[in-house]
Length: 160
Image (cartoon, rainbow, N blue to C red; front, side, top):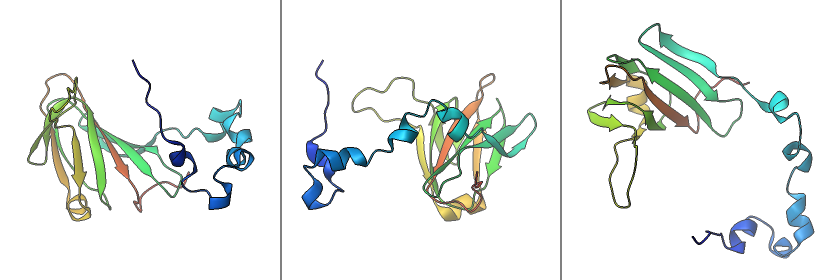
């Protein structure tokens, strides 16, 4: 099996022209102290934070937060349940477990994807639709439906 590799230009594309072949400069861009911190989890781990929910129906929690670049929520809908979920901004999402409906669309976690096959596990929700609410139904009798939602901005993101 051949290994994939990226061209050198990908490594240095954001470096100043006169530094693109300066290995000392390139290595200086790495924060060695943070990347080799033996207490990394203690210093940087953020536990999931409850965002919304209704006991026995659904739970939503922030799983990535505390920075200005990206945030993510994990939405779990219990078997046989339907929810309407609202957010303040647009987002992309992926169904990682279960099957049902995402709005008017069939939704299911992909088990095996073969080249050229279509899937029904990824969705994009506009800001307008996010604010008005997306209706999601879990059609399983036994398995929770789990969806990861990712945002580039959302006024509700916890600071830390």
